[in-house]
Length: 64
Image (tube, rainbow, N blue to C red; front, side, top):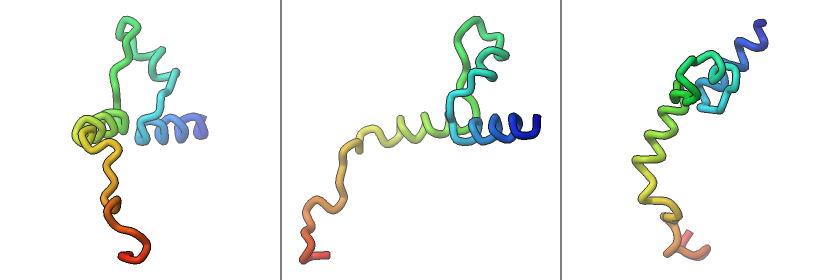
């Protein structure tokens, strides 16, 4: 039980999918994001315009 609790805790913080939480959510089939998943989604939405951006693209090895 302790190992399961720790794994669930880790998954919640990191935003990983956890089927145990989904089955117990009782939300009519659609699971609500929780813990780290909400944070991860917020960062994704905030920084999605920078997808593929490379800060050092104009520098070569000699510049560095």
